[in-house]
Amino acid sequence: MKISKAVIPVAGKGTRFLPATKCIPKEMIPLINIPMIYYVVKEAKDAGIETIAFISSTGKESILDFFDRNLELEKFLEDNKKVDLLKEVQEYARMVDIISIRQKEQLGLGHAVNEARCFISKGEEFAVLLGDDLVFAKRPCIAQLADVAAKQGGSVIGVMEVPKQETCKYGIVEGDFIDDKTLRMKKMVEKPAPEIAPSNLATPGRYILDSKIFGALKEIPKGAGGEYQLTDAINLLCQKEKVFAHIFEGRRFDTGNPSGYLKAVINLALQSEELKNDFINDFEEAKKYYEL
Ligand code: UTP
Image (cartoon, rainbow, N blue to C red; front, side, top):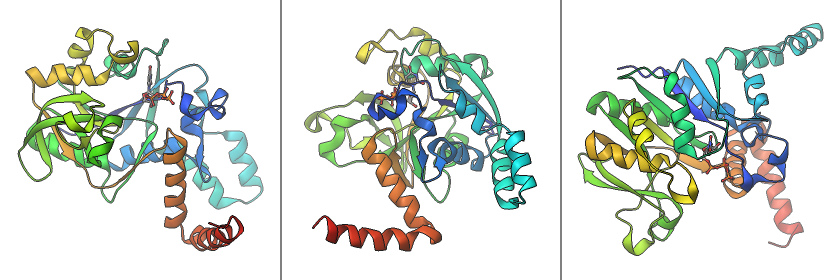
């Protein structure tokens, strides 16, 4: 089945990025000059997604504005013959169809995904991409997971290998390999210590989920941190339905924390013909200046 819808939860408070997130949605913080959420939406679009539901909250309106037209700005750019910029700002509004669903209380990622139940039909598979996780890959990460879902059926969770000593920072999956990169999942363990971690396969925010996840989300009680955890619902789903984990190809950045954000900016600068040399030269100068 073609996956045409994606859910992008962006309702979180972004405490790791305070004080900026006091008045700017985390997802609108730019990587160089483009908001980080653009890269997540582009990944979905490049994977063939046509409609995106943002799970949103108070103060996140600028995310919707970014993917809307701004006729006053367009007129200004047109009048001033800034043709390339005009095309660029119009392009963001054309990428995909967007809808917004309010999560009125921030009760966790599981609760946020459950808010999308009116958007997804029974029997439909859909994508979930976290708005503060970026994956730079040759083939969009979510498309790699959709390929597995098309072949195997069921839900597919994107996983990446992490050093064993870092398992305590992530949700870690347990399962049996069915090929080089894919496991039939048995369960997910939240932040296990390295000595008890069932694998070193961590789950950043990329999922293809069967609509049956909503049944599981309805059943779970509040979990870690007093929040409804998507992990708990996926664990429940694993017991009854086919759930796979797939090791995707690509570089992933947790742009929800300052260190991951910085790495993403540096990687983008190095990908840019225009900025690469400036960045490298200035870095050499900085090393001398700060005596690194
Ligand atoms: P995070 O755990 O990163 O939480 O949520 P956060 O609030 O965004 O950031 P910190 O940890 O306080 O810095 C993972 C994803 O789930 C969304 C967030 O927007 C983020 O994309 N989320 C989380 C919701 O949409 N609603 C929630 O109730 C919780």
